[in-house]
Image (cartoon, rainbow, N blue to C red):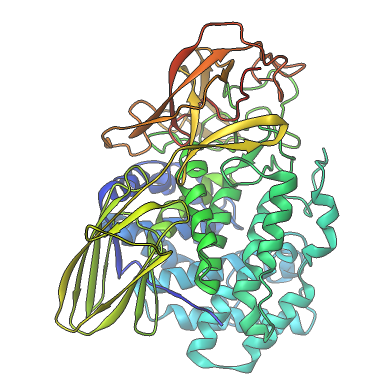
Length: 603
C-alpha cells in the first residue's frame, strides 16, 4: 500500500530560487503558449480548429499547478477559462474529447487518459466542485465503450494505459464503485506489457518503434506504483529492475536515458528527449510516494537539477527536443542528423524543434517538483526534497530556507497547533551530518513536534565532489545531486520564420548555439575544488552559475564524429596530451548549454 500521499498547490508554496524559476517559467513560453501557439490558442478542445488530442492537456498539466503555486490571478483565470471551455463540450453520454461520434473508434484515447489526469490536477488546485462529476461521467462512458467493444486501446493509448489510474484512484476514493476497478482491469488487459520487449532495449535500432519510444518507456516506470492497489496485485518493485536494465544499456550521466526519439544506447553524443525527462521525474515522484525508498528521490533530484534546466534556455522561451551529454554545438544539421529517428533541428533551442509535444509538455517539470517537496501519511509529514518551499495547513506550518542543491545548509521553521511527527530525508551522499550543531548519523531525521510548539531546526552536511566512471573509459564529475560539465562559450544565431502557418519570432523564435571556445580536453589530475557563488535571478544561469568546480585539464586530439563537423567523436581519437596543463572551471550541467560532460583522463 502507498506509504506517502501528495499535498496540493494550496498547501505548498515555493520560495527562494525555486520561486524565481517558476516565475521565469510563467513569464516564458509555458506561461504564454495560449497567446502565441495555434495548437493551444485555437485548439479544438476549446472549439477551435487546431489540434484536439494531446497538446492542450499536456500544457494544462503544467500550466495549472504553475498558476496556483504562484497564486497568479491572470494565470488562474486562463486555466479556468480553458477548463470551463473543455467541460462545456461534454456529450450527454459523458464523452469529452473533440472528435465526431462516429470517429470514436479511430480516436486514440491516450487523450482520454491524459485529460483524466489533468482534471484531477485541476480539481486539487481549484476545488471546482463540478470537476469530479465531469470526470465521473467521462470515465464511466470510457468504461462502457471499452467493455462493449465500441472502442479499444491501440497505439499511444495501449502503451500508456496506466496514465488513467491517477484519476481512477481519485474517483474510487470518493465513490468506491466497483466499475472503476473493472475499468482498471480492462486497461491493463488491453495495455502493453513492456516485459515482452526488454530485448529490444539492449541495442539501438535506427527505426521508430512504439516499443522503444523513450517517452513510452519512461512513463511506464510508475505503472506498478499507480496500479497495483487498484488491481489487487502485489507490489514487486518492478521499476528497479527496469532502472537497472535501462541504465546498463541506455543510461546517461544525468540519470536520464537516451532516446532520440527511441532508445539510443550509452553514447554521450546521442540525445534525450525533453518530454522523457519530465515524465521520468513524474514517475520518480510517484515511486517515492508509493515505496518510500529514498533512491527514487535522489534520482528525481538528478533529473530536476541537471537534465531539466539543461534543455531549456535561461529565459524559458525556448527549449531543445534532444539534449546530449557531450554537446559542442546546437545547430541545424546540413545533412543527416546524428539522432537516430529525429530531424535536423532536434537540438536547436526553439518554439517546437522537431515536434511540438515537448513544447506543450515540458511545463510540468518544475511545478510538480515543487508539489513533491513535502508528503504525508496520517500524522507524519516528510520533507522529501529540501528545496526552498513553505508547507502550510490549518494545523501546521513548515518553511525551509536553503539554496540547495548549490549549498547544503537548511533552516526549518516548524509551527504546530496539533502535535505531529516531522521527518527529513537525508541523501546518501551527505557527509558530517549536523542537526542543531550536533553531529548525527542517519538517513532520515525524525522530530516529535508538540501541540503549540514553534521550533527552528538547522541541518547541514558536507558533500564531496567526485569522479564517476562512464562507458568508453570516460568520466563525469558529480557533487551531490549536481553533475558538472566543461562549458563551451557560444554565440546565438536567432532564426525568425513561419512554417505551416506558425510564426517563430522573438522571443519565441529558434536559436542556434554556435561554439566559440575549445572543447577538446581531458582531465590531468584528481583535484576538484568547489567554489560557491551567488545565485542570480536566473538560478541555472548559463552566464552566472551559482557554483563552480575548479580542476586541471590538458588538450587532446579528440576529433569529430565521422561525417560531422558539429558533433564531437563518441570516443576521443587520442588521449595523449597536446597542450600544457591548465586550470578550468566546470559549471553545473544545467547551466552549461554547450558542454563536455564525459571526459577521459590523459594517458
